[in-house]
Image (cartoon, rainbow, N blue to C red):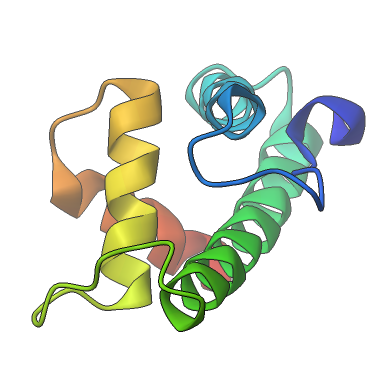
Length: 102
C-alpha cells in the first residue's frame, strides 16, 4: 500500500503519479479490507496532504503556481484531491481530512 500511495519527491503537482496515488488511497478509504487497513489509509492521507501542501508552498515560492488571494495551500490540496478522485463534494473531503488528523 505504501508503495502505491507514497508521493515521489521529484513529482510536480501536474504529475500523473500524484493523481494515481490519490486515487489508490481514496479507493482504500472507500472500500477497506478491514479496520486496520482503513486506519493506515487515514494516516497515509495525512502524509499525502502534508506533502501536497509543501509542494504547493514550494511552487508558489518559485512562481510555478499562480496564487489566488482567497486560496490557501490546504484549499489547493483539496482541489487536487477532488480533481484526482472525481468527487464533487468539498465538505466530504474536508471531513476525511479532519477524521484522518484525529
